[in-house]
Length: 443
Image (cartoon, rainbow, N blue to C red):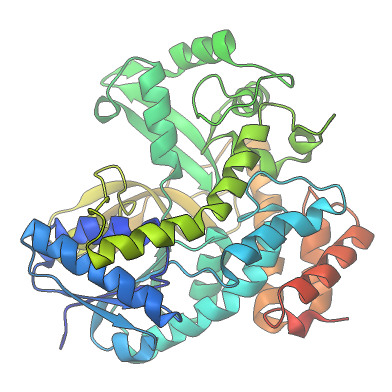
């Protein structure tokens, strides 16, 4: 390859990009690489590039860092292309929460499922497919690694519409494993856990330390510590989490990654009896609005870091998920096992649709990522996930074709919406709020 390129598209991500830059400048495997930071906002790309150069100097790294507004200028020769785009930025995310709320629909995150997830997909899928087509044209041997939500719909669209090698990555199951390990009194490195399902509703199929099955002890801890509908508001994941506990009682397996995500797959948990959400979920919703609202402050701090008036603040726990480790493994000749990778099913979970994008363990190494077959899921879990995969297939079709009727069907089939009249009202409001991105869905 002419250039050992690592391209990040959506470099204005205030949390992900600093973590990626820290990880890549800390890895000797990338000393001879150029990191291309691409963002439609040139000032954002250049600010991140300056932060990255300061990190490289601190780490003694040979990584070169360049800023771009034109992704096609950055892509030729790329080995890895990472996407973290946010079409509509923080204001778009807020609208995805506030529009459904006008119709009594409360969401805790609204970036993956629920009406917010559908609206986000309608904006993100066309742009990600366009990016993937540029990758196919200019860097056909590259791996495209997507982090943008809704992860499942986005990766399905990319793999359906292009021949690019693509996966999706999310840190969620790792956080669940760490929280459960801590409750069990064990180091996460000493715990082996197997998760499988769809992104943001993945199920713990097995958890053990050595030869010891930890599920019996986990069930005891959950029963002893978890609350119910009247649980106090919580922002911390763990065995006390009321929704995850209730789902384990119902379906027999513990879900990941935390109540604020898994609750959105089921309509009953987000029905408020008062101003505050039940099942301890108010804290999760509050976290989302606070995260949206802090973007301006984070940018002020990053500009100060770039200008040298503030110290570099990228800490060891601000990692960019697992992308740097996976990229290094792909360049090497030793296989490693990644706990959660999102990729086309193709029989890995035989009782889910073959075309669905599933979250399963995978073997990574020597230029290959191979998802592992985990066998059939329990029937009730498979039924929940199959229905969701079908709705996501409609969402992808609507986003790719611009068909208003299909977008309305996808919204109507979401369990948090549930009726066509509400779906129409949400879509019509969204067309106005998200102009010009959803102009093709006007009635």
